[in-house]
Image 1 (tube, rainbow, N blue to C red):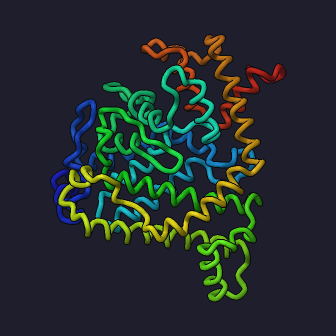
Image 2 (image 1 turned 60 degrees about the horizontal axis):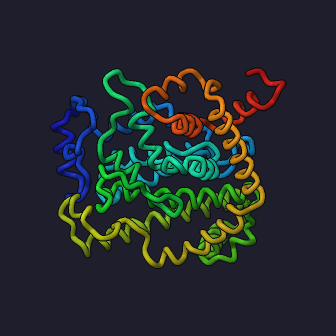
Length: 385
C-alpha cells in the first residue's frame, strides 16, 4: 500500500534533484497530521477542487460573458487547460506533477466575475485600501474566505502552493509582494511552469474563441508565419479537411509546438545552470522555465493580433464597460446601505474587516450570473428580491 514512506521513495527515485519534494514542504500555517497515502500536494489539489471558489469558476468570464454563448471558454475550462499543460511540462522535466497541478487549479481562484474588467473596477474602488489584485485575493480565498474546517480558517494549503498563487505572473498578472513569501526569491519550477502554461492556454483558446465568435478572421491569421506554416502543413496532409476540423488541428498544433519549445528551452537552461536543489532554482536571478527567444519572436505577432483585433474588439469592449457599470453600482449600493448584504456576509464583517473590504470580497466571489441576478433584484422594480 502506498504510504508516506513510499511517496518519499518514489519522489527520491523519479523526481529531479531540483524538483520540489512534498516531504520538504515548509508546511501549513496550522499544523496537521500527514495523510496516510496522499502527499501534501495531492491533498492540496483535492481541497482546491472541492472548494466553493473553484466551482464558481464555471460561471466566471474568460473573455466572453456566459450569456454570449455556450461554446466559449469560462474561467474553469481555462483553469483545466492550464492544469493539463502544466502536468505535461512538469512530467517531461521530472518535476512534481502534483504540485504543478495544485497551483494550476488554484491560480485563478481570486478572479472576479467578468474577467479583467471586474478586477480593474474593483482595483479602482479599493484604491484607498491597497487596491485589488486577483493573486492576493486568491491567497485570501484559500487562507480565509473558504470556510470548511472547524480547526482553522481557509483551506490551510501548503506553503509552496500558496507561494505559487501569490507569485503567479504573466503579461496580465503582476505578482504580489507579501513578505512571508520572500519576494526576492524565484518560486519553484513547478510554479514557474504554471505561469507559462497559463500563457499558452489563454493565447490559444482565445484564438479559438475569437474565430468562433467572428471577432477574428482566418484571413488575418494566415498572414502570420506561425499560423501559416501549420496551416500549410495540414493542407498537405489533409486535402479535403473542413474548416472547423482544420482550425482545431491548427490550435492543437500551436499548443504542442509551444509546450515542446518550453520543455527544450528549459532543459537547455538546466544544462547551463546545473542546479542541484530546489533552493538553487530559487537563488537564480531569473526564472528558468521559459520559451526560447525564437519562439518568443514567433508568438509576438499572434499576441499583437489578439490584442488589437480581439481584446479591443467592440463586442469585448462593450461587455467590459457594461460589466464595470454593474459592479460599480452594486458596490456603491452595498456601501451606502450594507444591510442589503446577505446575512452571512454581514456577519463576516465582524471579524475585523472594513466594510469596503467585506463588500469587495463578496463581489469578487460572485459569478457573472449572480452579479446579473443581484443587479436585477436591486434595480429592477419588477424583480422579486
